[in-house]
Length: 321
Image (cartoon, rainbow, N blue to C red; front, side, top):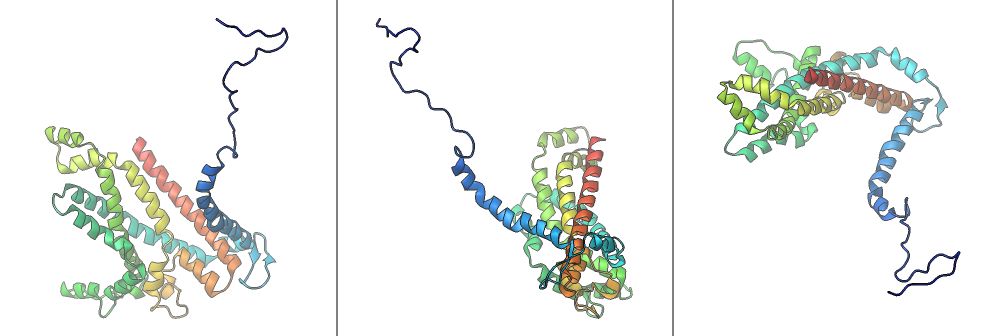
Protein backbone atom coordinates (compact mmCIF):
# COMPACT_ATOMS: atom_id res chain seq x y z
CA UNK A 1 0.00 0.00 0.00
CA UNK A 2 1.35 3.36 -0.96
CA UNK A 3 1.80 5.95 1.73
CA UNK A 4 2.19 9.66 1.56
CA UNK A 5 5.40 10.98 3.10
CA UNK A 6 5.51 14.32 4.78
CA UNK A 7 8.10 16.30 6.60
CA UNK A 8 8.04 16.54 10.38
CA UNK A 9 6.19 19.56 11.69
CA UNK A 10 3.90 19.85 8.70
CA UNK A 11 0.33 18.48 8.37
CA UNK A 12 -0.16 15.52 6.11
CA UNK A 13 -1.08 16.31 2.54
CA UNK A 14 -4.59 15.66 1.38
CA UNK A 15 -4.53 12.96 -1.22
CA UNK A 16 -8.02 13.39 -2.67
CA UNK A 17 -11.29 15.31 -2.49
CA UNK A 18 -11.87 18.90 -1.45
CA UNK A 19 -12.07 20.29 2.06
CA UNK A 20 -15.60 20.47 3.44
CA UNK A 21 -17.02 23.97 3.30
CA UNK A 22 -18.23 25.46 6.54
CA UNK A 23 -22.01 25.69 6.70
CA UNK A 24 -23.27 29.23 6.39
CA UNK A 25 -25.38 30.50 9.24
CA UNK A 26 -27.79 33.36 9.80
CA UNK A 27 -29.77 35.46 7.38
CA UNK A 28 -27.28 35.15 4.56
CA UNK A 29 -27.73 31.38 4.41
CA UNK A 30 -31.54 31.43 4.38
CA UNK A 31 -32.33 34.83 2.89
CA UNK A 32 -34.52 33.34 0.17
CA UNK A 33 -36.75 31.69 2.80
CA UNK A 34 -37.15 34.91 4.73
CA UNK A 35 -37.84 36.76 1.50
CA UNK A 36 -40.64 34.30 0.70
CA UNK A 37 -42.48 35.01 3.96
CA UNK A 38 -41.60 38.69 4.19
CA UNK A 39 -44.74 40.03 2.40
CA UNK A 40 -46.96 38.92 5.27
CA UNK A 41 -44.78 40.58 7.90
CA UNK A 42 -44.41 43.74 5.83
CA UNK A 43 -48.18 44.02 5.44
CA UNK A 44 -48.68 43.25 9.13
CA UNK A 45 -46.16 45.96 9.98
CA UNK A 46 -47.78 48.50 7.67
CA UNK A 47 -51.42 47.79 8.50
CA UNK A 48 -51.08 46.30 11.99
CA UNK A 49 -48.24 47.38 14.23
CA UNK A 50 -47.71 50.89 12.87
CA UNK A 51 -51.43 51.87 13.16
CA UNK A 52 -51.56 50.42 16.67
CA UNK A 53 -48.52 52.39 17.72
CA UNK A 54 -49.85 55.53 16.03
CA UNK A 55 -53.21 55.19 17.79
CA UNK A 56 -51.40 55.02 21.14
CA UNK A 57 -49.45 58.15 20.20
CA UNK A 58 -52.62 59.95 19.09
CA UNK A 59 -54.37 59.07 22.36
CA UNK A 60 -51.79 61.20 24.16
CA UNK A 61 -52.68 64.28 22.08
CA UNK A 62 -55.61 66.50 21.23
CA UNK A 63 -56.16 66.31 17.50
CA UNK A 64 -59.05 66.98 15.13
CA UNK A 65 -57.53 64.95 12.32
CA UNK A 66 -56.35 67.93 10.24
CA UNK A 67 -54.54 70.49 12.37
CA UNK A 68 -51.48 70.15 14.51
CA UNK A 69 -51.41 67.84 17.51
CA UNK A 70 -51.41 69.24 21.03
CA UNK A 71 -49.79 67.19 23.79
CA UNK A 72 -52.33 66.06 26.38
CA UNK A 73 -50.52 63.27 28.21
CA UNK A 74 -52.82 61.03 30.20
CA UNK A 75 -55.65 63.53 30.48
CA UNK A 76 -57.62 61.70 27.77
CA UNK A 77 -57.53 58.51 29.82
CA UNK A 78 -58.41 60.36 33.02
CA UNK A 79 -61.47 61.79 31.33
CA UNK A 80 -62.30 58.36 29.88
CA UNK A 81 -62.25 56.85 33.38
CA UNK A 82 -64.87 59.36 34.54
CA UNK A 83 -66.88 59.49 31.29
CA UNK A 84 -70.40 58.33 32.16
CA UNK A 85 -71.34 57.99 28.48
CA UNK A 86 -68.48 55.58 27.86
CA UNK A 87 -69.42 53.38 30.82
CA UNK A 88 -73.04 53.49 29.69
CA UNK A 89 -71.86 52.15 26.33
CA UNK A 90 -69.81 49.48 28.12
CA UNK A 91 -72.89 48.36 30.06
CA UNK A 92 -74.99 48.24 26.89
CA UNK A 93 -72.34 46.20 25.10
CA UNK A 94 -72.01 43.65 27.89
CA UNK A 95 -75.78 43.16 28.14
CA UNK A 96 -76.15 42.77 24.38
CA UNK A 97 -73.20 40.38 24.30
CA UNK A 98 -74.69 38.24 27.09
CA UNK A 99 -78.15 38.19 25.48
CA UNK A 100 -76.64 37.12 22.16
CA UNK A 101 -73.72 34.85 23.05
CA UNK A 102 -75.14 32.30 25.47
CA UNK A 103 -78.34 31.50 23.52
CA UNK A 104 -76.26 31.45 20.35
CA UNK A 105 -73.78 28.91 21.74
CA UNK A 106 -76.62 26.69 22.97
CA UNK A 107 -78.43 26.82 19.62
CA UNK A 108 -75.19 26.27 17.71
CA UNK A 109 -74.34 23.18 19.76
CA UNK A 110 -77.83 21.71 19.34
CA UNK A 111 -77.71 22.43 15.62
CA UNK A 112 -74.29 20.77 15.33
CA UNK A 113 -75.56 17.63 17.07
CA UNK A 114 -78.52 17.49 14.68
CA UNK A 115 -76.28 18.00 11.65
CA UNK A 116 -73.90 15.32 12.88
CA UNK A 117 -76.72 12.79 13.14
CA UNK A 118 -78.30 13.72 9.80
CA UNK A 119 -78.06 11.05 7.12
CA UNK A 120 -79.28 12.82 3.99
CA UNK A 121 -78.66 16.32 2.60
CA UNK A 122 -75.83 17.08 5.05
CA UNK A 123 -74.13 19.55 2.72
CA UNK A 124 -77.41 21.36 2.03
CA UNK A 125 -78.04 21.83 5.75
CA UNK A 126 -74.49 23.05 6.35
CA UNK A 127 -74.78 25.60 3.55
CA UNK A 128 -78.16 26.80 4.82
CA UNK A 129 -76.90 27.30 8.37
CA UNK A 130 -73.67 28.98 7.25
CA UNK A 131 -75.39 31.36 4.83
CA UNK A 132 -76.38 34.02 7.44
CA UNK A 133 -72.73 34.56 8.36
CA UNK A 134 -71.75 35.53 4.80
CA UNK A 135 -74.81 37.69 4.21
CA UNK A 136 -74.37 41.46 4.29
CA UNK A 137 -74.87 42.74 7.84
CA UNK A 138 -76.30 46.00 6.51
CA UNK A 139 -78.96 44.21 4.46
CA UNK A 140 -79.82 41.90 7.34
CA UNK A 141 -80.07 44.82 9.79
CA UNK A 142 -82.48 46.62 7.46
CA UNK A 143 -84.65 43.50 7.28
CA UNK A 144 -84.57 43.07 11.05
CA UNK A 145 -85.59 46.71 11.40
CA UNK A 146 -88.75 45.81 9.50
CA UNK A 147 -89.25 42.62 11.49
CA UNK A 148 -89.12 44.52 14.81
CA UNK A 149 -91.10 47.50 13.57
CA UNK A 150 -93.78 48.66 16.02
CA UNK A 151 -96.71 48.97 13.62
CA UNK A 152 -95.87 46.68 10.71
CA UNK A 153 -93.30 44.27 12.17
CA UNK A 154 -93.59 40.52 11.95
CA UNK A 155 -92.83 40.05 15.67
CA UNK A 156 -95.68 42.31 16.76
CA UNK A 157 -97.98 40.62 14.27
CA UNK A 158 -97.23 37.29 15.92
CA UNK A 159 -97.80 38.79 19.37
CA UNK A 160 -101.19 40.14 18.28
CA UNK A 161 -102.07 36.76 16.79
CA UNK A 162 -101.77 35.15 20.22
CA UNK A 163 -103.62 37.98 21.97
CA UNK A 164 -100.67 39.98 23.32
CA UNK A 165 -100.03 43.69 23.05
CA UNK A 166 -97.56 45.27 20.69
CA UNK A 167 -94.04 46.10 21.88
CA UNK A 168 -92.11 49.15 20.73
CA UNK A 169 -88.96 47.12 20.18
CA UNK A 170 -86.82 49.90 18.70
CA UNK A 171 -88.01 52.59 21.11
CA UNK A 172 -87.53 50.97 24.52
CA UNK A 173 -84.21 50.17 26.26
CA UNK A 174 -84.71 46.42 26.61
CA UNK A 175 -86.48 46.12 23.27
CA UNK A 176 -83.47 47.65 21.52
CA UNK A 177 -81.05 45.28 23.25
CA UNK A 178 -83.18 42.22 22.46
CA UNK A 179 -83.48 43.24 18.80
CA UNK A 180 -79.71 43.69 18.42
CA UNK A 181 -78.98 40.46 20.30
CA UNK A 182 -81.45 38.54 18.13
CA UNK A 183 -79.76 39.84 15.00
CA UNK A 184 -76.34 38.79 16.27
CA UNK A 185 -77.63 35.37 17.34
CA UNK A 186 -79.15 34.78 13.92
CA UNK A 187 -75.94 35.86 12.22
CA UNK A 188 -73.47 33.70 14.18
CA UNK A 189 -75.40 30.56 15.15
CA UNK A 190 -74.78 28.77 11.85
CA UNK A 191 -71.08 29.66 11.77
CA UNK A 192 -70.46 28.33 15.28
CA UNK A 193 -72.58 25.26 14.50
CA UNK A 194 -70.12 24.37 11.73
CA UNK A 195 -67.25 24.79 14.21
CA UNK A 196 -68.98 22.51 16.72
CA UNK A 197 -69.74 20.03 13.94
CA UNK A 198 -66.05 19.81 13.09
CA UNK A 199 -65.35 19.08 16.76
CA UNK A 200 -68.06 16.43 16.93
CA UNK A 201 -66.56 14.57 14.02
CA UNK A 202 -63.33 14.12 15.97
CA UNK A 203 -65.07 12.32 18.86
CA UNK A 204 -64.43 8.56 18.59
CA UNK A 205 -67.60 6.64 17.74
CA UNK A 206 -66.51 3.88 20.13
CA UNK A 207 -67.38 6.14 23.06
CA UNK A 208 -70.98 6.47 21.91
CA UNK A 209 -71.25 2.74 21.24
CA UNK A 210 -69.98 1.96 24.73
CA UNK A 211 -72.44 4.44 26.22
CA UNK A 212 -75.36 2.84 24.38
CA UNK A 213 -74.28 -0.59 25.58
CA UNK A 214 -74.23 0.72 29.16
CA UNK A 215 -77.77 2.04 28.72
CA UNK A 216 -77.01 5.77 28.56
CA UNK A 217 -79.66 7.92 26.94
CA UNK A 218 -79.16 10.87 24.58
CA UNK A 219 -79.10 13.42 27.41
CA UNK A 220 -76.55 11.47 29.46
CA UNK A 221 -74.44 10.87 26.35
CA UNK A 222 -74.43 14.58 25.57
CA UNK A 223 -73.37 15.72 29.06
CA UNK A 224 -71.00 12.81 29.81
CA UNK A 225 -69.29 12.40 26.42
CA UNK A 226 -70.11 15.12 23.89
CA UNK A 227 -69.76 18.18 26.10
CA UNK A 228 -66.46 17.15 27.76
CA UNK A 229 -64.93 16.22 24.41
CA UNK A 230 -66.02 19.55 22.92
CA UNK A 231 -64.52 21.65 25.72
CA UNK A 232 -61.57 22.93 23.61
CA UNK A 233 -63.96 23.84 20.80
CA UNK A 234 -66.31 25.49 23.29
CA UNK A 235 -63.40 27.54 24.61
CA UNK A 236 -62.52 28.68 21.09
CA UNK A 237 -66.12 29.58 20.24
CA UNK A 238 -66.63 31.45 23.51
CA UNK A 239 -63.46 33.52 23.16
CA UNK A 240 -64.11 34.36 19.50
CA UNK A 241 -67.74 35.22 20.27
CA UNK A 242 -66.57 37.47 23.09
CA UNK A 243 -64.11 39.31 20.86
CA UNK A 244 -66.63 39.79 18.04
CA UNK A 245 -69.65 40.44 20.27
CA UNK A 246 -67.98 43.15 22.31
CA UNK A 247 -67.00 44.92 19.09
CA UNK A 248 -70.50 45.06 17.61
CA UNK A 249 -70.94 48.12 15.42
CA UNK A 250 -72.84 47.56 12.18
CA UNK A 251 -75.84 45.96 13.87
CA UNK A 252 -76.84 48.90 16.12
CA UNK A 253 -75.64 51.48 13.61
CA UNK A 254 -77.92 50.32 10.80
CA UNK A 255 -80.75 48.96 12.93
CA UNK A 256 -81.17 52.15 14.99
CA UNK A 257 -80.13 54.93 12.66
CA UNK A 258 -83.72 55.72 11.70
CA UNK A 259 -84.81 56.01 15.34
CA UNK A 260 -82.13 58.46 16.48
CA UNK A 261 -83.21 62.07 16.97
CA UNK A 262 -80.10 64.08 17.80
CA UNK A 263 -77.44 62.01 16.04
CA UNK A 264 -77.54 59.31 13.41
CA UNK A 265 -75.28 57.16 15.55
CA UNK A 266 -76.80 57.86 18.97
CA UNK A 267 -77.90 54.24 19.45
CA UNK A 268 -81.64 54.83 19.68
CA UNK A 269 -83.70 56.61 22.35
CA UNK A 270 -81.66 57.14 25.50
CA UNK A 271 -78.61 55.69 23.73
CA UNK A 272 -79.90 52.27 24.80
CA UNK A 273 -78.24 50.56 21.85
CA UNK A 274 -75.01 52.52 21.88
CA UNK A 275 -72.15 50.03 22.02
CA UNK A 276 -68.51 50.75 22.76
CA UNK A 277 -67.45 50.78 19.11
CA UNK A 278 -70.44 52.93 18.21
CA UNK A 279 -69.40 55.41 20.90
CA UNK A 280 -65.85 55.36 19.53
CA UNK A 281 -67.19 56.08 16.03
CA UNK A 282 -69.31 58.94 17.33
CA UNK A 283 -66.47 60.58 19.25
CA UNK A 284 -63.93 60.17 16.45
CA UNK A 285 -65.85 60.94 13.27
CA UNK A 286 -68.91 62.87 14.46
CA UNK A 287 -67.09 65.06 16.98
CA UNK A 288 -63.74 65.02 15.10
CA UNK A 289 -61.92 64.26 18.34
CA UNK A 290 -59.32 61.76 17.16
CA UNK A 291 -57.27 61.96 20.34
CA UNK A 292 -60.13 61.01 22.63
CA UNK A 293 -61.37 58.49 20.07
CA UNK A 294 -58.00 56.73 20.21
CA UNK A 295 -58.23 56.65 24.02
CA UNK A 296 -61.72 55.11 23.72
CA UNK A 297 -60.32 52.49 21.34
CA UNK A 298 -57.68 51.48 23.89
CA UNK A 299 -60.37 51.34 26.56
CA UNK A 300 -62.36 48.97 24.33
CA UNK A 301 -59.25 46.85 23.86
CA UNK A 302 -58.78 46.46 27.61
CA UNK A 303 -62.44 45.51 28.14
CA UNK A 304 -62.30 42.88 25.38
CA UNK A 305 -59.05 41.40 26.73
CA UNK A 306 -60.44 41.32 30.27
CA UNK A 307 -63.62 39.45 29.30
CA UNK A 308 -61.70 37.07 27.03
CA UNK A 309 -59.37 36.15 29.89
CA UNK A 310 -62.32 35.66 32.27
CA UNK A 311 -64.11 33.34 29.84
CA UNK A 312 -60.92 31.43 29.12
CA UNK A 313 -60.19 30.92 32.81
CA UNK A 314 -63.76 29.83 33.61
CA UNK A 315 -63.92 27.23 30.84
CA UNK A 316 -60.43 25.91 31.57
CA UNK A 317 -61.13 25.67 35.31
CA UNK A 318 -64.34 23.70 34.73
CA UNK A 319 -62.45 21.42 32.40
CA UNK A 320 -59.81 20.71 35.05
CA UNK A 321 -62.50 20.07 37.70
